[in-house]
Length: 401
Ligand code: CTP
Picture 1 (cartoon, protein in one colour):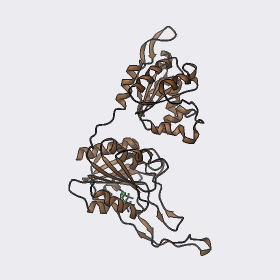
Picture 2 (cartoon, protein in one colour):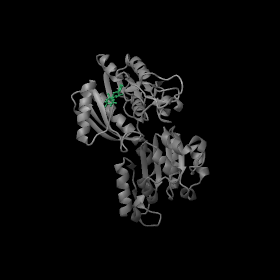
Picture 3 (cartoon, protein in one colour):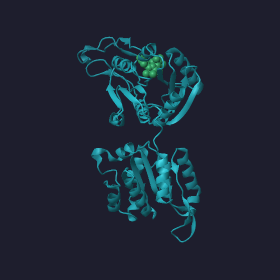
Picture 4 (cartoon, helix red, strand yellow):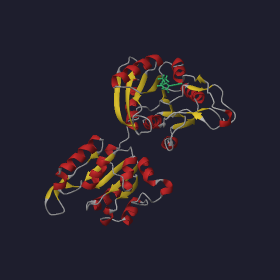
């Protein structure tokens, strides 16, 4: 596992040396991200020696490899030990003024925090509120323990012992059951780009992130996955393309997505159409760049194939087919009504409905999806990271199969 250990400015940092050593000894790849202040307690040399990896505190080091984002996106687990009151406040507010702050914003991995501070600070209303905020966001708080504090007094505020923290952290990050083992899954993702001329296209704002997370979640749960990817944002396919059980097939237009998905569906147990397929393309693609001097062009559009409809028509017994519907809606009731009508029209086993626009769905790592089954009933209503949404969808598919 790729573990990021954040160290902040408290005396308990010396205990974190044991934590890092234990993780490395257990075979994990550990990257330590200390705050500048924490280096007064334990220095870079120690962290590099115990983690066996280079250590920096600045977002300006190793910029070529975009280290500040790479650490967060590569992490399978983030542990902050010790976490000072100041760090908890910064985390709650999403402040990213150093490498640790940026890493925390860039990650979707589970985050485990071991607070350490004086009892008075731990019990302060501000700290209580910050802890409540972090818990609501799914951050796991371990400790603090009750006992002797550095000042000679005692009370809650001691960082939990390294062994206890290792156990808690590894439990949180435990891989999910391989409940999709033996299944073949075909997922499409991204937005198609329908050419107008050699330089222009009709496109949409889909980033491909939700489909990539669906593919990754399936592969991590044991499935063998074909991920048919139209245009996706930078970095979205990085983890999927490295996964040994995911085969990434590029398909940039509706026709190409149709060909690739039809092919993958012939052997797939589960077919998921997440791609934003353009409904229309230009009737005739210009072989030359359209120039201003030719006047204002009039583009004649023709319908693209409905890929999902074709997959449903060719559905084999025992095969599960589901679609994604991106909808703009006035209200949740309106969203549900539209979703139910679309589920009916498409004839899919499941339709995942999500509300797009006004900060929802597109270009965001968060999503909210309502999953409807073949009877139009709401199976799951889930909000959270696109990975959490993906896992909830697979939970429902597994339960139905
Ligand atoms: N879809 C498809 N082929 C298309 C258009 C959409 O396979 N030409 C699939 C999408 O991948 C998605 C589902 O159909 O799984 C719903 O897509 P959506 O755009 O919401 O539905 P449309 O049928 O295009 O309906 P409309 O745009 O009119 O709401």
